[in-house]
Length: 93
Image (cartoon, rainbow, N blue to C red; front, side, top):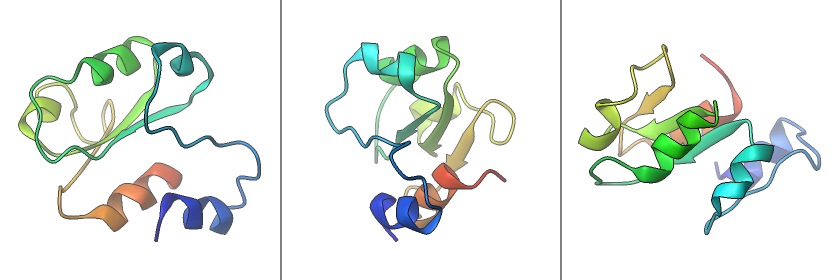
C-alpha cells in the first residue's frame, strides 16, 4: 500500500504532507522522518531530522544503522520491504 493509501486508511485527514524535495525548514512542522534509500553513507538529512527530534523510519543500510538502533531511537526496515516502510510510518511497533 502506498503512503497515500495508508493516510486514507488511518484517516489522517489534512494532518500529513508528503515531500520529495524537502527543505530543512520543513522539519519544524514534522513528527517523523522517512527515508527509503537503497544505499547511502551517512545521510545529512537523517542527522538534521534527528537534531530536530523527529522519529526516523529508515531503510536498513550501512549509513543508517550507524545512527539508528531499531526500536530505540527510530525504526529500521529492510530495503526490500516497501510495505513495512509505509506501514511503520503510520503505525508504531
